[in-house]
Image 1 (cartoon, rainbow, N blue to C red):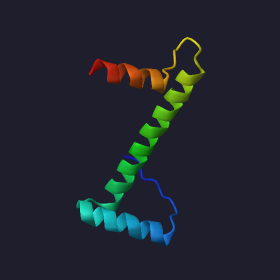
Image 2 (cartoon, one colour; image 1 turned 60 degrees about the vertical axis):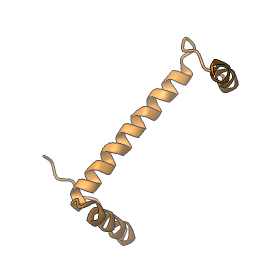
Image 3 (cartoon, one colour; image 1 turned 120 degrees about the vertical axis):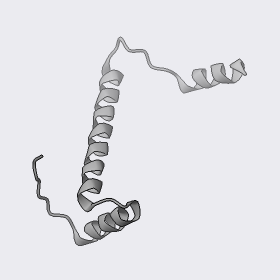
Image 4 (spheres, rainbow, N blue to C red; image 1 turned 60 degrees about the horizontal axis):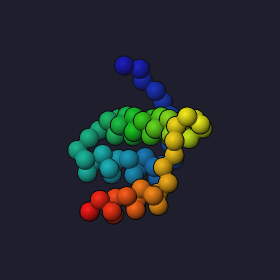
Amino acid sequence: MTQVSARLPDDLVQSIDQAARRLHRSRAELIRQAVEYYLEDLEDLRLGLERLQDPADSLLDWEEVRAELLAAH
């Protein structure tokens, strides 16, 4: 596993340490998990934008979907 160094503001490190203590995790675990979640979210956003730009991928109209869902009950 590669070790990475980063400079963070003191108040952010304090928040990380507090969260790590509450979750019974190490600072490194918490930071690693936060980066993993961020990268997953970033990939989801990239895929979403890619789909929005694809003319072959149909978009759903919220009002139509809502009406269909309400009519189904």
